[in-house]
Length: 581
Image 1 (tube, rainbow, N blue to C red):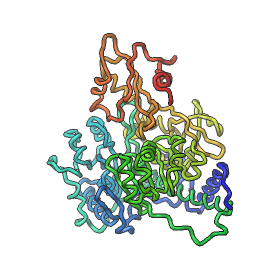
Image 2 (image 1 turned 120 degrees about the vertical axis):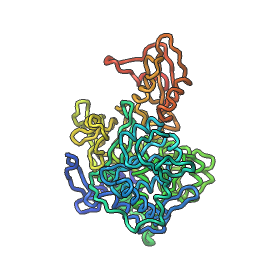
Image 3 (image 1 turned 30 degrees about the vertical axis):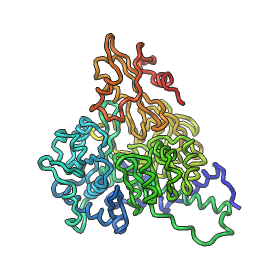
Image 4 (image 1 turned 60 degrees about the vertical axis):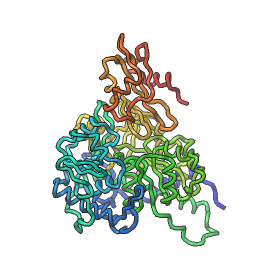
């Protein structure tokens, strides 16, 4: 008879499996090497670049790779289109190491294929936020100076003449093209594809991806993620699955479960079919979902926009095995009237990252899935994806933790003076590893502030227990995480202060059941000035993407509370206006 494992035993099993898998000579063994001037753990068996990752998917041939609405792309067709586009980028735009190709579009198949084409010639992919307004798009294009901009018709119309000198390749567009622009279909024609990719000499520390994070000074910062960083995140994702399987086998062997009824090998796991409900311009959608599906030879089911009913329909139709989204998406599906009547038995994993998963939702996912379990990952744009992750029974047993560190990373918790704290003490979480970004594009000041002696300052308050598992407790950074999107409060405040009517403004987060947090603002007007919420919203329209707009605004007659240093007491404002439910 099987013996139920306690949470401590599950942690021991997981940690023992991790130790075995990372031993010298094991599949995930690592060696300390100097990268960017810092000693970091580098996997011995990691590929050198993402071009090699794409090449590894070619043998999957006629298997489905991308599903979008009624469209289906096999691996063979995807490779043909990638080869054609890669040659166009190389010959017509001189794309290669040291250059950048910007992608600004919704989650279309063209995003994925353009990403692989640019990476395969060594150019860095700049993932532009598809919700940005024209000024935000213009800033990123000036900042990254791409040799080509691959966009869709909707973004083309929004950008207008603000594209600068970037040559255009346009997908999903039925109107007239600007002079010199090319249709995506014409330059990614599979029937005209050469037999091989162009040659490319890619260094592991060349930029592979640049993703923009909201800036503290009103402009976004482009995090430079190298091929080494992105490959190591992919290895981390593979490791987490392998470690969970090994820990489960250890637990089964210890309990004796299956000894008397062993009818042969365990049934083969179903093919990986992952839903992509989150944007590709973030590390979760791109690095943690799309890259892992690709190397596994799986199928990526794409959505135009989030809709719980449509997600359930696709899960049933495509037999989706992995759902990775922000917590609000899982909650909306579980609460949807169609949940009970939809066949979700294919799901093996449900969860994601981008925001903390409430403990009640962990239980609901575990209870709601007939074959699967919940999972969570913690990471940042600057770490190229996950720094920790945990799933299945290991997560259910300890839902307040975000799990142990991935093997290639190191962590410290420090006090305000930078001194390392003992296990169980709270302080700022610092991370070091090969998947930490190279720096912020064109921002040496911001880079020096964020990375000290190779350690990245996360801005999160955390505890590390005696077993090395991490618990995120709070944030130092003045940021609201709204449905997985980071909103730096100072960026919104700067836009509000452009109004002459405003004397003081403080932007902060308030609890929201659906999104985790919502953006709120407290505003004090100048003497004699008049301003209402509608006028404020009208001012922000076109200046900031809508997910950054305050959804709750309080106009106050008295000055905002400040501390002795003159800083606004945002926690006091939050407690006053929106106490936690």
